Image (cartoon, rainbow, N blue to C red; front, side):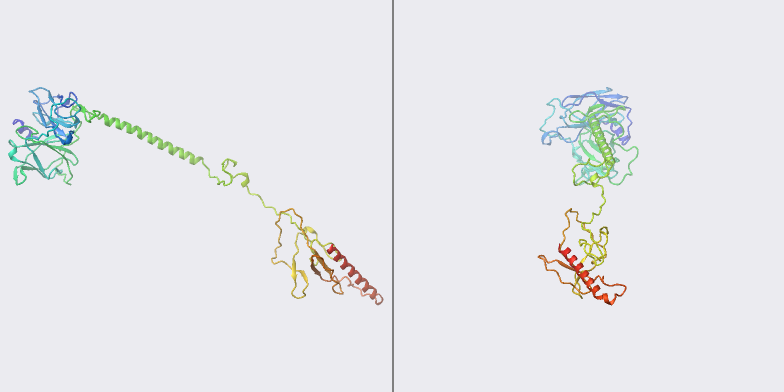
Length: 474
């Protein structure tokens, strides 16, 4: 480090340098080709630019061929050109300073080196800085928490100086506290970094041989739940647009940063990706809305209809939600009885012919007679009521005519039962009727006529019995 810059850098350790000037890359950074940097605005020369490697090396077997490069402008010139001895696809951060302090011209974002020429570095040899420095805890920095930066005092020239570099943000000089020697940790000092949690910080070390002669280490600030050291002047990763003008930020050169002098950072790759993502998102949203609207319309236009298990089509109904015609209810009409029964005194079956002295009813009465088995006392067959008081009806719809069974009807007279008829081939059922008492008269008959009347009555009763029996057999 130049002796004339040391007092100035120590005087403004954390000043948020609102630079009145900036810089830009006048050509694209390429492997082993000259890179030209120009100053814009009014600074205080002489100017210098520090090129700090960032990220892992792209060379095979982890060969690190990059060195921290400190380039000074000649006199009051506002531009400088130098050979970039970085391999392609590697990255770096550029910091420009003038006589007012370190990083006064701004800090670029991470720059990517594109393909170019060969032969400016040895791809098989790893370079080492003149001295190394360490931190305790190792590789760890915590916001507002004390850490120790130390080195081997036998490897340095003079007193080392350290700088903090935030890519795309602010760079500053780290103030040194009282130096101390600790066995196993060499010579060093304690520092509580006033950098916000999550910030990427490059810690750069140098001695009297120049900036960066001690190499650099990369840290991501950790949270220690202590923010007492932070204020409005604390270094930030987002003070504004990164300096550097236009340069590639990706290995294919698609990303371009445009910054410095109030410019803005434009990442073409991010813009293209954002546009494509927005278009895809809009299409997806439109499809979701279309699906929802279509589903709502179908839901509103669909009416509940009964399930048709007999037909496999849905267009047989009247169209207003009612079931088809064959689903309409039909009233049940009682069919006419197949056998018209006739009831008269003594409950004669409807098929018996008219007999003198027997009362009859019209066939439209539709009441069916019931036949019973023999009585328990007399042993004679006769009529008995059904088990239920309600008359039974026939539900047969067949047009077949009724069949009749042979029936014997016996009319009793005053003299007692008559002789039974000869049994037919199919033994008929016998129905006995009570006496008709047709010989009873209100006026007593004369004695001279009693015999004649008795014979007449007996003959009439016998004739009636014979007529009824004949009709039943027929």
